[in-house]
Image 1 (cartoon, one colour):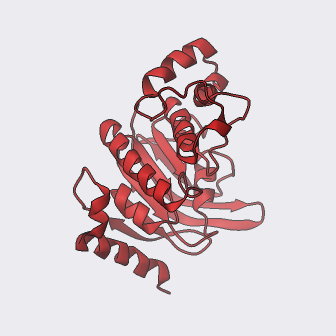
Image 2 (cartoon, rainbow, N blue to C red):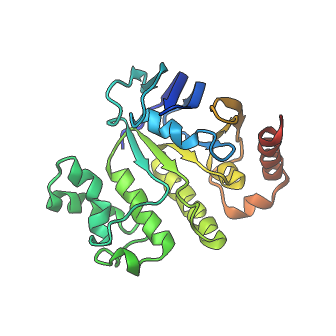
Image 3 (cartoon, rainbow, N blue to C red):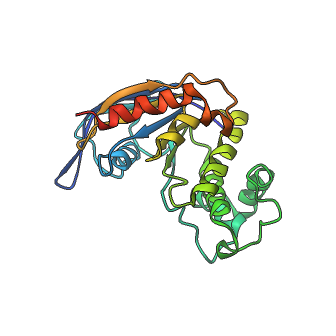
Length: 249
C-alpha cells in the first residue's frame, strides 16, 4: 500500500448551515496510526466528510504526501461506521466492491482480495452471505474492502463501535497485529478513549463543535501492543490525560 503523511491546515467548514470545523489543524506522519476523540456531535465524522469532498471547505488546506489535495477522493479510503455490506453479495464480493466500482473487472478484483482473506480471518468464508457472518467478521470484510482501495490514507470511522465489549477488544487486538505488519497511515475516529490509547501513536482531542484540536497527546507505549498492557500504570496515565482534556472547560 502506498503510505503517505497527512497535514490539515486551518480547515473551516459548514454542513448546510451548521458550523462544524473551525481552524482545524493536525499532522499525521507516513505509516502512523492516529486517533480522533471528542464529544458526541463535535465534528469528528465531519472531518472525514471534508477530507473526502463530501462537504465543501470554506478555508484551509489539506496535503497528502506534501501535495495539496484538489480532487478529494483518490488520497483516502473511508470505512464508514456501519460497514455497509450489501446483503446480496458474498463476503468476497463485498470485499471487492470498492475496487470494482473504480473499474477493476470482478475476476481481477477477486484475485487481488483472495491473498488477504486468511490475514483478515475470513478464510473459508469467501462465499458466505453477510447474515451468516458474526459482527466482527462483517467489520473485517468492510476493513478489507477499504484496504483494497490502495489509497495513501485510511479513514476509519468508529469501526468497532457497534460491537459488544468482548468482540470489540478482540478486534482491537487483531487490528493492532495487522497494522504492525502493514504500517498503514491511519486516522481512526472513536468514542472509546481506551481504544485510542491502545491503537494510536498520537491522539487528537477535539473541542466541542465547531471542532478544533484541543490537545494532541503522544502515545509512547512500546509496540507491539497487547491487551494486557491496558492494566499497566503508564496506560492508565495516558487514558487519564485524555479524559482530563475531554472534560476540562
